[in-house]
Amino acid sequence: MKNLFDKYRTQVVLGMQWGDEGKGKVVDLLAEQCDMVIRYQGGANAGHTVQFDGKQFILHLVPSGILRPGLTCVIGNGVVLDPESFLEEIHSLESEGFEVMPRLHISHLAHLILPFHKFIDKAKEASKAGQKIGTTGRGIGPAYSDKISREGLRICDIMAPDWQDRIRTFMAVKNRQLGLYDHEPLPDKEAIDLIGRFRGKAAGSVTDTRRFVYQSRQEGRRMLLEGAQGTLLDIDFGTYPYVTSSNTTIGGVFTGLGLNPRNVDRVIGILKAYTTRVGNGPFPTELTDDTGEHLREKGHEFGATTGRPRRCGWFDATIGRYAVQVNGVDAIVLTKLDVLDNMETIKICTGYRIGDSVFTEFINDCSMLAQAEPVYETMPGWQTDTSDIKTYRDLPGPARAYIERLETLCETPIETVSLGPARSATLWRAVA
Image 1 (spheres, helix red, strand yellow):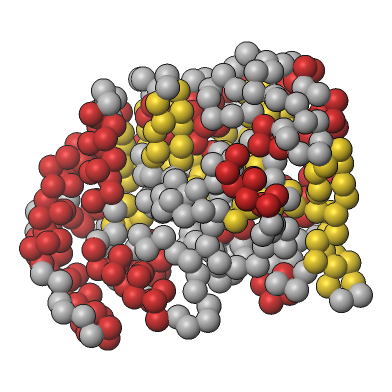
Image 2 (cartoon, helix red, strand yellow):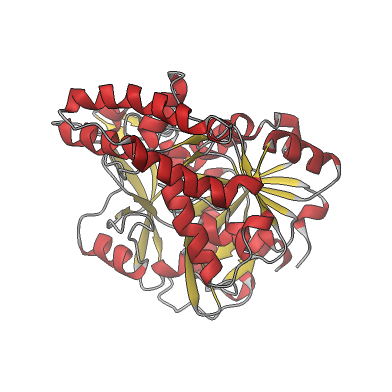
């Protein structure tokens, strides 16, 4: 296969739905062609799954490129880093024989998640009567809240000589906040011990990643920028308030790394061949019948981070087109086409009906979206096992017709099709 990075030196991979589109596999595949894989936002609430050599790896903080020997990986300043999850993930990777720390660079400006943030996350969710977000409880929102309110703790703070005093000061403020929830103060020792272990493991990897990434680009290194979650979970452009706490769309690249918009050469969007979401919030094409259960079981639609069953529904083209517009998507990777192999007919949502009006563009307002009835067009299924197909032209005619219809509706070329989790189960349509 032709190396896509020969022409596009800096590329972004991001999700176009509510996350869980299969970005981990795509990043792993493209990582074979580049020099660096860089994570720019989110936290340990993300779960990128990669499968090869009969094993499955689930990564939450470390970029998926770490599974490719020799690649440089970066965690940018836009990430909120949980030291506990980080240490567990590094241990798991090293126990499998992967060299991690010498290849990993961590931004000194990234904010930290401490046990306090996780408690607040769960307490806030439990206190909501009728509008639960469905968070993972990993402390992501409270950590970003601290960042925005200028009360956060950054990695450069805990790398300073007086780091223990800084943690004590931070915990004194946070323990006063815990009193609002009738919770006993958390001991300083717990946070200090955790940060001490993190310092011992990560100190040699902490650096000014903005400068490092910029210099790497100037030197011509091929870079893949890895997003977490998906477009509809963006804090600004998603289905607010049922969203995550960071910018999962293209803007997160620039604030989360310090690159400028002219530094990105190509944006690759990942779409699932149907639609899923985890957590609460409106979902117009959701299927609560046997078809939805079939998609869940055949697609193994259970959260990589939480294990929660994902809500499943038909493909929503209004979402795909919206994500193309917001992110400037140049090419689409369509994943999990094989999950539809047994379907006699397949539906595609092309718009929403609300009252007497039909909308063909995505609706952000959740109060309106909750009233939306999907407008469908129906296509014939192919009822053929596609798992062993090696080229795009060998796909059944109805499968190609379905892909090409999605391509038309989303107004962007679908260049790659994934037929399962394995690296080999991928059709590179551009070179078919």
